[in-house]
Length: 471
Ligand SMILES: *[C@@H]1O[C@H](CO)[C@@H](O)[C@H](O)[C@H]1NC(C)=O
Ligand SMILES: *[C@@H]1O[C@H](CO)[C@@H](O)[C@H](O)[C@H]1NC(C)=O
Ligand SMILES: *[C@@H]1O[C@H](CO)[C@@H](O)[C@H](O)[C@H]1NC(C)=O
Ligand SMILES: *[C@@H]1O[C@H](CO)[C@@H](O)[C@H](O)[C@H]1NC(C)=O
Ligand SMILES: *[C@@H]1O[C@H](CO)[C@@H](O)[C@H](O)[C@H]1NC(C)=O
Ligand SMILES: *[C@@H]1O[C@H](CO)[C@@H](O)[C@H](O)[C@H]1NC(C)=O
Image 1 (cartoon, rainbow, N blue to C red):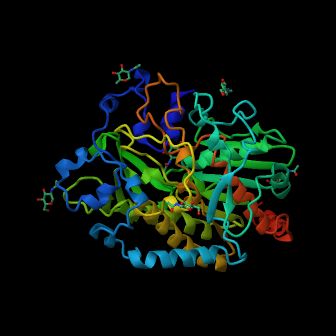
Image 2 (image 1 turned 135 degrees about the vertical axis):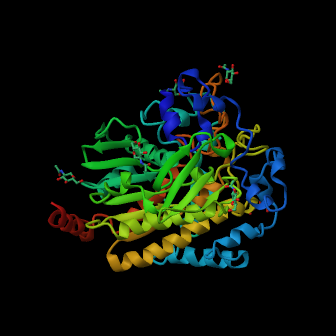
């Protein structure tokens, strides 16, 4: 495993390993200290208003798991700065409404359900699939339990078939699929490749050596998948590798999409857009090239607008970019926020994810930052979808958040690397083991492609249109 991959592709700057060869600049040396300020402590967003800052590093309690039995948290005053943020009382309603919107065509909402035992899983192993990223190869690093592999998602009102690779390949014959986002998006792409390799083979067709932009071709079906690295979706620049918390400070241009991916989208039939945990980092927000605020920059003269602001704006810019993309006739899937599951401490305070079974849906609930991130996505999705109807761009919601909220057992934890390897995020409760519950995202995807009408005339028509409009 090249450490560079980890460096570039993991969502946490703080995952930088301690290996000396990477400390290749004086600015990096401070990273040898364990960052003392907890970035992922979302509770901070709520607590900052009442607890003096100097107490911040001491807030070592687990945050996500208080959610298990507590009532929904009330929004902090800082959240109301986002004018379009719904009040907490209206959230459940609007969420139900959104669920209704996404399922308008079908009486069954495939995204609400339970994990049920599936003795037949898994459908591939680390020996049959070469595409598994080193840090998600949990078996290789000795994960002792295997029960986490043996579940399938059962929607409340229907069945969701297990991924059928032959069927999928038939539907995407001659087509192309792009993943735009961070390492969790790449995690899904690798799951998809592994599932397809059961019945076919793939070749690396990357057009660059850059690990951030990979392309794989399935010659038997002339199908292409590609990944585009863009963890913030918008134009981003690491302004200070240390930043206020020693974990980097990024400048985000929230109204300018990252052209690394937008310039490449036109030929794609399907695009899966996602983003998530990078927005937890200290970030400065620019709009029209003016500084408008920040998230956790700790600067007395800059308003902290919270990461919900940047997350919302980034999705707004990204989704609208498709509506404004000349010649783009594809279908855009917004894959919703994937929760992490640190328990008994944050990522740098011994937090881990050691559960070996999923939750039942009545054992947890989406609230706190998971709900805020999710709602921001839904609202921007709805806006873009409306616009897309006029412009001929189809938007679909790959609504994975709730299913994944129930899978605290699906992360690598300490089995994402050799035990003696010196990594900063020792317990990875963010990414997902392969094979593992993230394979389910491709069950959803196949189901949605079938609902698109599969190899309908519409698909071919769009390709013909493209030929005439582009080449
Ligand atoms: C796959 O996992 C096994 C342990 O289950 C390990 O011995 C083997 O080296 C791994 N192989 C690869 C290619 O990762
Ligand atoms: C393969 O698919 C691409 C579009 O993804 C298309 O341009 C090309 O003509 C196809 N090639 C063959 C041999 O069908
Ligand atoms: C685009 O990709 C290049 C090459 O990986 C990278 O150096 C650059 O920072 C990226 N641009 C943005 C806006 O992220
Ligand atoms: C913040 O703004 C005030 C008033 O404009 C100025 O006096 C002060 O130097 C600024 N502080 C910083 C850290 O820029
Ligand atoms: C959740 O539902 C299951 C099945 O209906 C039930 O057995 C269990 O007691 C419930 N758990 C809680 C915490 O309500
Ligand atoms: C891990 O990194 C820390 C901090 O740089 C260092 O003190 C320690 O010796 C390293 N351990 C190993 C096994 O390399």
